[in-house]
Length: 237
Image 1 (cartoon, rainbow, N blue to C red):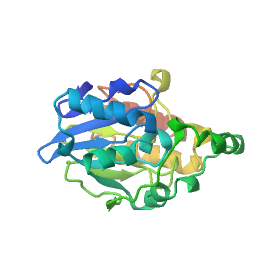
Image 2: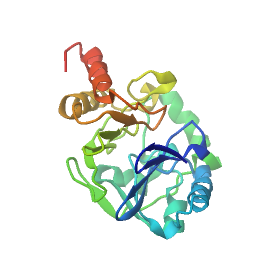
Image 3: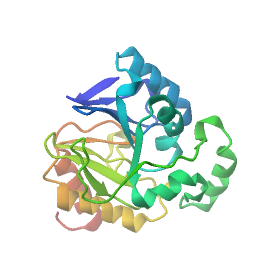
Image 4: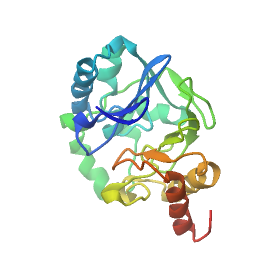
């Protein structure tokens, strides 16, 4: 595991295709996303090898119900007995993974057989706690509803740590900051509005940004998200 900030660790053992995180706080340990189904055992092994007992994992927060972010959820919940947390709108897609739609028709056709592969398997899970925009979590994060890539997508803001966990509302592929992949985003207009929201409402509240895809931005994150929003909307944030 790689430390990003005090209290925040990234599971680098699963590779670089997708990121998921561990948050340490006085109430225990919280997983933020779970990678693909094939990553679950690797995450369990990383916790054990770092002397973090599985029973200390109290909560698992899911930014959205895609196979690369919630694929390992069923296995990790079973191993830790942790409570599962997601946005109220995303509950449907955790419980019924087949209802999650992507934008591109060709990709929908491709994903139908792909769901039979172990890496893309997404087992239904009923969440324990549903959250909404603006809600403050016990871990100290503010829930920011950032729909577009998925209807109930959330990002997490920790003002004290000046940290934003973006999920897929933002990506940093090739160290180029941008929005979520268009082919995988059924509501691109809403995805752009979510970027504007992160920039306009919260851009002064964070320096560090970690992503579902791509390396972390460790400084000036808020300024960079503001610049992206200004570029998208051709208006200063």
